[in-house]
Length: 291
Image (cartoon, rainbow, N blue to C red; front, side, top):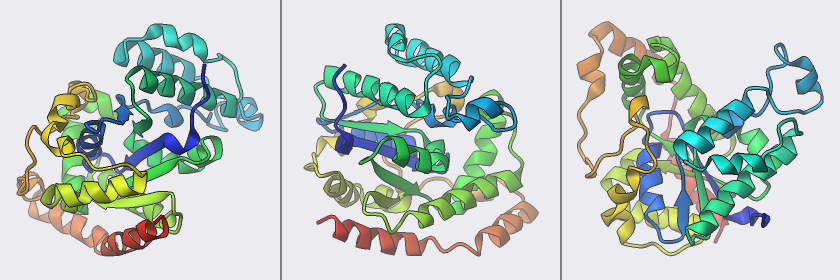
């Protein structure tokens, strides 16, 4: 298997329900970008120290990882034969290299040059990704907190099996705050770029041009015109992840329709301490460092 080019690996992360699948579909419509359904690879990589202390101590892969990868290759990529390229009991670094190489092999089969991996929850595993995939770039998608919280609250009730049950409102708030805090921690790094969902929806062409500049590729008009064509290969309807066939510049306000007055006030109180406008400003500075 041909080793991957490290600089051609992009990770799209953010709080779930921030629009990462939408952005993934836009980017995957580019002639040079290959992307696949969520792997959740790094969520299952590191063992919990209290459950698997020896594996954790020696840097071995969690027991949960192999079954997850088996399901990923068979059920989502429909390429079960690729599982043979993963060792069953390896060290985390080797296991990660093997997995990333497999995705790059699939990328090459599609005639593409850039791999885009989108798993929102990987925002909680940036340390492991930067450790085991040196040279990788990260795109952080940030969306208004009230919209994300309301969407999480709704989708976990519509599809509780996929989300581990119905999320309490406080947990929805915590997950958004946590994601924003993590994005803020990585703003100083030139391999991290912040994208505001609201800017993407209102000005898709200019926003995508900035992202393409960060990735070091040319913007293509078909990214906006043809993105819905590739979306079906990237989504799992059962989890509640779907992609709009048209860009909605004035989406419906779930925050006001789903939550009562007391719930709305609680959300606003918890989100008032977070200023995401600073993320937008700093992302522009970060992009300038790459020129």
